[in-house]
Amino acid sequence: MKVLVAEDNVPSRLLTARILKKKGYEVFEAVDGLKAVDILKVNKVDAVVTDWMMPGMDGLELIQYIRGNIKPAPVIIVLTAIASDQAQEQVVNAGADDFIAKPVFGQELCSRLETCLLRQNSPINKANYRISKTGILPKFVAVCIAASTGGPPAVAEVVSKLNATDKAAFFIIMHGPKWMLETFSERLSSLAQMPVSLASTGLQIKPGNIYLAPGDQHTVIDPLKMELLLVDDPPENFVRPSADPLFRSAAGKFQSRTIGIVLTGMGRDATVGCGYIAAAGGRVIAQDPATAVLPSMPESIINLRIADTVAPLSLVASTINKMIPEVLSNAW
Image (cartoon, rainbow, N blue to C red; front, side, top):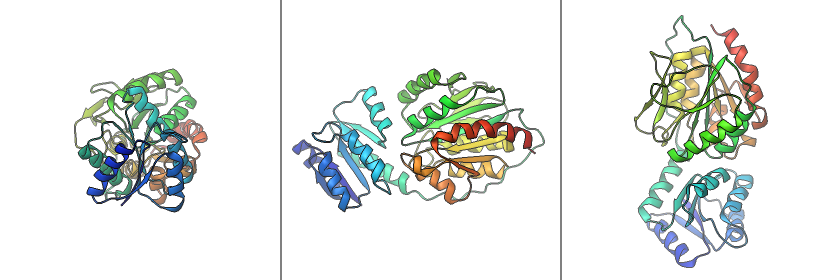
């Protein structure tokens, strides 16, 4: 696989390139973001490892160029000496797939890069999408939203446009570290017309509330109680939290009164979960890939013909608002 290393500091660039070459990657080197763009115009690469602070075009500007112009998009990992939580959040919001604080250690870099590449190129796991339907359904709808790369601004836009309602509870899975999701929960609280809570074991599920999965654990719906559970099961689709466990549990509990929404992101997370929702008679919405920072997650849903509706990001919330009463009235 081919990796582009963009770094203006010569010793750092040479070290990073040497680490990757020893692992068998073909490496291109750029002294800044502008040179990286020149290389990308004539070479297809699988990943970009970039410094943040560079002359001419910095790492965040390079990310924006790649996300807007390179299809299919490579994995992007940012290396920087600016190691604060706020800096990492800024990098993730810009559309990076991962962030590593300097100094760079070879094992960590290669491990994180390999994980990102596996997520990007992972096959869809085969699953038996059978749902055992019961005659008793909850009296409200479960709306499950999944996002990854480029997720924070996309989720924020959707949540800010959701109508307050007592006909649905909302569950959000976004890939990211624990601290970032805690901070993001506070941001959503300032935007939403409904209360926002970080999920926790035993937290009661009530309509008119938004629940954000915390980091490092999967969030699922208890099959016996109207409560949330946090579980330490292994990562799925190379991430934890993963959307698939939540979506599966929602389909089992709410069945045809389930809506799955897949927004921007890398990889195939939520694909299997949406299969369960469709099998239960629920509805699936995919963000129009043309409006996604990284389109592979919604594209996976669309390519398998699971999506009932494909909507640009600007219309996802209005689509959800309209669909909730339809799902509630038409449920078997």
